[in-house]
Image (cartoon, rainbow, N blue to C red):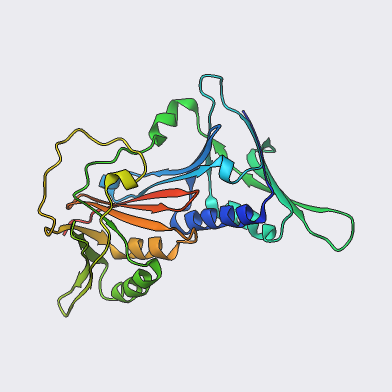
Length: 288
């Protein structure tokens, strides 16, 4: 297995750093899948056990000026590595003014992603900082555990209000309860509700956009029949408010669109999109 890549454009360096920073705020460890066309960051916990799932896709052509890889074989030309995003963030702290970043898969005492960062100097001499980020190689037999999750037929798809506004509201609501009810319909309405023995708080949003599935990333849907719903009928999901707050606080990728998809009382799926990154975040429903 071999990998070598180089990022030169400072805007791409900053954007790459923001994406990894977002992931580091959401998860401690994940799988990095390297293919000839993309980088994927994957977390595949079981939703039924209260875990979350993340699928983040970075097209290599939007970030890398040089990109070369060899997978485990010609037939399976991919690389799967377990990595801690926070360790990559620490390595990239010295890259804010970098001339370029080189990323290599290396073998030190353990397998590593080695980051070589060329920093500007006042003299004609270059100064390169090297960071080794330890990784674990995922064996071929386990790759199927990290396939892109199939998406069900959603009861509701709705564009989220401004993330910063939501974060301010959720930060206040989480002091009242550990859980909240997120509900929305196909008529552009969304509600966030918290209820305790002492108080009930609800925030309503109207005139939001209900995107069609054509506006979203290509995905494999299950074969269950899609029920035709009254557009005014709300679909609801009871979720962990602190996980939702963590999701909102971690957004450094500046998405141009955030779509919330709900399967009534089963799962909430968030899709963040901008011109060169897509991030899917699956949140389990909490039993009442």
